[in-house]
Structure formats: C-alpha cells, structure tokens
Amino acid sequence: MILKKLFQSPLLFFAGEAYEGSVLSTVEDAATQARSRTWGTVESVQQLFLALSQVISCSEGFSIMGFYSQVILPRLLDWSLSDATLAKYRQALLADVQGEVLEIGFGTGLNLAYYPPHINKITVIDSNPGMNSLAKKRIRDSNKAVAHYVLSSESLPMAENSFDSVVSTWTLCSIANVEQALKEIYRVLKPGGKFFFVEHGLSDNPKVQTWQHRLTPIQKVIADGCHLDRNIEQIVKGQFSQVEIEQFTPEKMPDLVTHLYRGVATKPLA
Ligand SMILES: C[S@@+](CC[C@H](N)C(=O)[O-])C[C@H]1O[C@@H](n2cnc3c(N)ncnc32)[C@H](O)[C@@H]1O
Picture 1 (cartoon, rainbow, N blue to C red):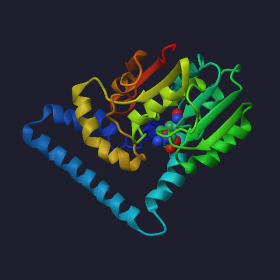
Picture 2: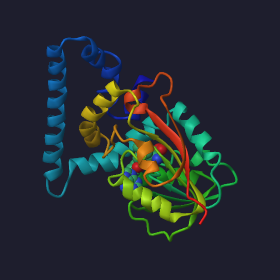
Picture 3: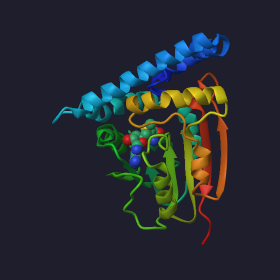
C-alpha cells in the first residue's frame, strides 16, 4: 500500500511521506534556523533534479528523459493509478457520462473498465506514444469500440460541437498549456455537453500549498510535467461559467499530492 501511494504521484515518496512524517512538522515546529536548513536541502535537491534533467535530455540521439517518460513512466503510472480508492472515483464519475465521448489524457486506459454499458463507443487521446502498448492491450480486452489517437489536448483536430461528454482524470495537472486545453474541450463539446473531471491540485491549506509550490519543479521532472500546485477550480471556471465542483482529500492520503477536485462543467445551450 505504501508503495502504491508512492507512485500516485512519483514525488510522494520523497515529499508526501516526508510531509506527513517529519519535514513539514519540523518546519511548523522548529525555529527559523531549522526551517531555513530544511528548505535549503529541498532547494538543493530541486536544483540537482533540474540540472540532471537538462544534462540527460541534451545527449544526442538517445534521451534518457525520453526513455523514462515513454517506457518507464507509463508502467509506473499504470501501477500507481490503478489503486482501488481511485477506481471508486473513476466509476462514480463515469456513471453519468452520455452520448459521444472524448477522453483526454487516456494514459494506459484505466478508465475503460468503468464506462457504463450504454457507452459503447469512445474517442481517446494522449500526447505520450509511450502509453500505447498498455493502452492498446486494455482496448483489445474491452468490449467498447475505442478510437485511439496520439494527440495533444491543446490542439484537437475534431470539429466544434462534436461531443456530448469530455472526460479527464488526473490529467489537467500535466498538460503544458492547460488553459488552451480547456478552450479546446469547450470548443469540441456540443451545447449542453458536459466536461467530467477528477484531478489533483492545489490544497486549501496554506502550509501544504507552500510545499506544493516548492516541490512542483521536482515533480515536473519526475512525473512528466505534473504540477502539484494547479488550482483546478480556477482553471475550469476560467473557461466554463457553469461548474459543479468539490474539493476533498481521500482518507489516509496526503493532501500534498491527493488534494482532489471532482466535478462537472457544462457548456451552455446555444
Ligand atoms: C497522470 S496520467 C493520467 C492517465 C489517465 N487519465 C488515468 O486516469 O489513469 C496523465 C496523462 O496525461 C497525458 N498528457 C499530458 N499532457 C497531455 C496533453 N497535452 N495532451 C494529452 N494528454 C496529455 C500523459 O501522457 C498521461 O498519460
């Protein structure tokens, strides 16, 4: 279980456990000197990660970061995101999905098993071709017709007003230009269509927020662009005027990486 939590965010081991256990409580309780010492360590680790990522992504022909993000990360994500608690949220979210469906950030296809029986055709996209082998296996094993594309959510080739439902789970954190992706989601939804999402993001606890801001640069390197500190509510409401949303942290999970935003945003009728 501890290992599962570790990769729900790959940073969890480093940050979440430290946050839950010692680092944050040390920071809260200790004197200023101890505080700056702790932050100094985190800052050095951040710098080390950033420097390392620059060095290894510069080598010509073969990029270790490319290998990590296309071969290793898909397997880590598949393993960590198949947690039973997260599965409950997937199932509950997808129960209300209707009509023509687009899923963005399909990943390895962990949502596929939770689409209700009345949905038998789905269009899915993901920007990382490394997700393909695991995703294709899940598609083959499912009884749905799935149109699967390697595409970026920021630039969808689909016509406007094409879908009744767009789905995103644990994806808005890692889209580079998330505001542009929201524009695209809105554009491809039919009037009255709905955007269904479960995402992790910025906590409502200021102390946790501080750590989320500090650790996001490292998390982006380890988890292929994932931000710990995105305010998903603000981002969705920046595009949609009609949004039902709740924020919560599942029991026994750290707020740092599992502060969840769950909701449905609706495109107005004409
Ligand atoms: C943490 S994984 C979540 C996967 C899946 N949605 C799930 O719930 O298991 C985030 C996914 O978003 C994808 N992604 C990141 N940026 C993207 C973009 N700009 N367009 C489409 N997919 C993107 C990643 O490749 C990855 O598969």
